[in-house]
Amino acid sequence: MACKRGALIVLEGVDKAGKTTQCKKLVHALQQSGCPAEMMRFPERTTTIGQLISAYLENKSDLEDHTVHLLFSANRWELVPLMKKKLEQGTTLVVDRYAFSGVAFTSAKPGFCLEWCMKPDVGLPKPDLVMFLQLSPAEAALRGQFGEERYETSVFQRAVQQKFEQLMKDPSVNWRAIDASQSVEDVHENITTHSLNTIDAAENLPLGELCG
Ligand code: Z5A
Image (cartoon, rainbow, N blue to C red; front, side, top):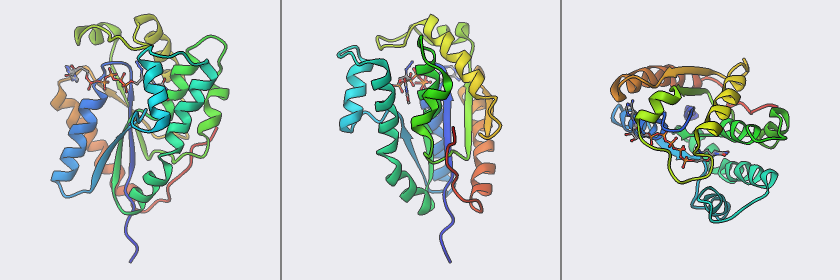
């Protein structure tokens, strides 16, 4: 009998919403319960393309805005063969940011529209579940100062949040809003419940593709 596929689960959210914390906890919990699971993150800074992106985010280099958008997308595409292989083998992938961050961050810049920003990611594996960790700017501020990287300003983050809100209206994507202001354990419990339901359902469904 063919192996049941793993689920593609994405966590998105504004800065300091707790995406990385929750991805790690979810993968650990799934593994402990006997469900094969691995974490991935975008940008994946270890590849050649990822190193270009990392230097840009760290303000060590400048790249033209369209160019860096396409590099973020290329960074996802270069990982697609690996993602598909793992999913087909039955491993659930828990992904820290994905194409939705790509669209939200670039379309928050002047002169960009959602439609153009979505095009390069059309055809990527479609997540079975996208959880958006919601946190107000005031609550995020309690979790520490912004870092030194590009995009880490409150004005830009507010613009990004608005773009995410637009993206979440797309009914073709399985969005779940998560209250990220709760304790780490309460958020984890909520995320785990949604993930387990998704993993069960995904076993019997073909992997979809992102559309424009
Ligand atoms: N970007 C893009 O432009 N285009 C793209 O296509 C993609 C990304 C994919 C990558 O940053 C940047 O690239 C990002 C978007 C852009 N720019 N920004 N801004 P990154 O991935 O390297 O870093 P990040 O995603 O920005 O990390 P983050 O948002 O700063 O953090 P987080 O993962 O959401 O949160 P955390 O690290 O888990 O937690 C932050 C702190 O809060 C930490 O001290 C925790 O202990 C604390 N925390 C977490 N949960 C809680 C709760 N529940 N209560 C209290 N405290 C908590």
